Image 1 (spheres, helix red, strand yellow):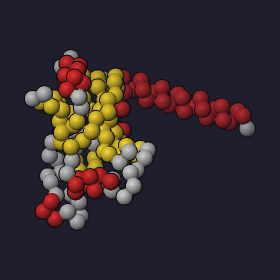
Image 2 (cartoon, one colour; image 1 turned 60 degrees about the vertical axis):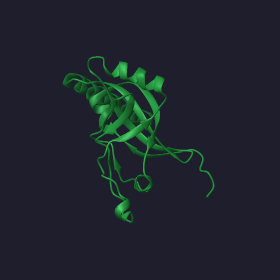
Image 3 (cartoon, one colour; image 1 turned 180 degrees about the vertical axis):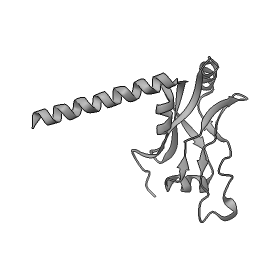
Image 4 (cartoon, one colour; image 1 turned 60 degrees about the horizontal axis):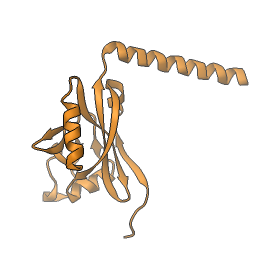
Length: 155
């Protein structure tokens, strides 16, 4: 099989952009088993309730659900098992220090295939308060009305 080039989005965590301010983004690899990769290629993965944590000098993603592969039989793993993220030790230590600050957390934003390998985009995020969410919704509505008015005016 020839080596695949380019990127293909597998799953996104849209709820993260609603609940958090994304300060920085990092790309990391995933340590997965074969049936998990096959299931992810079919798009059967959810990032909705997932987060990442640094434990023992290693980076782990918790709460990411990968549905069992239909033809996987006894090779299937637990859908909610913690998955190891692959990054350089220096980057992991930097993330651990940044996530230890008050109000910051590590949230998976997107899973994609890059040149045939599964990659996860990890965001260093700060939680939004209710008034921040309302401000964002009001700004989005105002932008939509401006675009609508511009479109109607140009006709």
